Image (cartoon, rainbow, N blue to C red; front, side, top):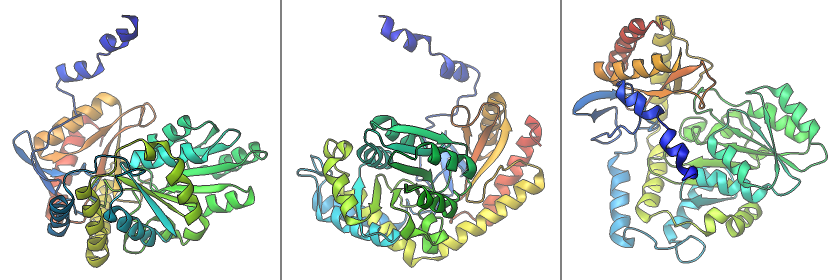
Length: 392
């Protein structure tokens, strides 16, 4: 069947496997902590979004166990019908307070939070204006809407203003990552807000990598810049700092009410299971109580960044615990990733289309719970492998 020709023609992954350079779908045998066991070996984990180190926290696990005992393993339906529990509602109140908004709505995944929010709010004759390096869930949310889409050059405020001017006759929303997931740089949210106000546009910030990392006690990028009241919608995920799976959108009560009753991915997808919801709620409590985690995350980031730059690595525009090590070619990136594992460090290869061709990189990410010894051990390995591959 011609439809399946592309299936049989796709050989990229098999070629990488044959060459011993395949670095995806790697089965980890332990919890996502500072070190993990992969393929029978203990390695330093520098490829996890577990920024605050909460996925294996006793209070988080205990909350999940208690919820499993009380509510069972699932909700057997959508939030819209039978799948809303009191723990969902409690978590939504807690999330709204965390990011400084009136109301919040929990989705089954962070991807769904963007998909549902954007496709519901952007209608015919409306325009979504996005940074060209925004997350795939933002791009797909725009595709799922009936509106127009404009992309502006990464962090280019002049180009953003040009796009806003070109859409002067349409209702429009500027959508941006708070922290960019590959480059590790922070969106210029105050400037975006000012331009949006000038051109009568709504602003939405996807803070998947900002919550837990940026702002006071991890309240996010908008809190960091003091512009929470000027940003209309804040989206977040639970699969990074908040130690579980799911996502949310926070805004004023009317906007959340509208999305709640019209978002197709909310109405027609299963409710987040109670154990996941309870673990997120506990993770928020721990994040706010154990403020040393936020401080330790940034301390570790500074140590790693200084060592990488002193060694001669190109770390791009990063200013967060997401640190790219720019390699260039895809094959060298895959090879460096494999060699890092062989020497004792787990890292992630990022190649086109996630980044521009020729800008392939290793995406490193720090945790609050990494020790200085672990960071220096990992850096010694990165330097050794970097020299082997010719990156430094």
